[in-house]
Length: 67
Image (cartoon, rainbow, N blue to C red):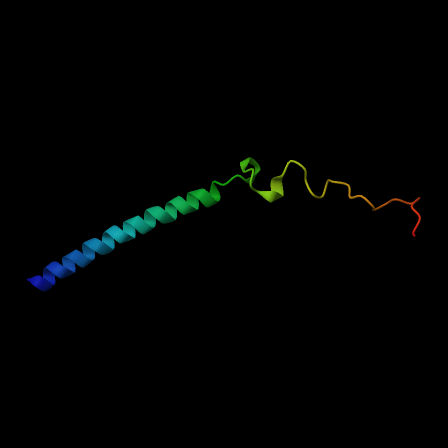
């Protein structure tokens, strides 16, 4: 009888753990696929000033003298 009860406890524990893992995986997937980088201010790719649209100083100046 003890073995049967132990097996039932193990099955119940495994079922609970698998449900918790499944819920956590769904939550993580929702966060990943529901992520919008344009609304996240921490995302460096979508800053207000885009790095490729900013003119860099020193390039394209023709009238500078080399010392």
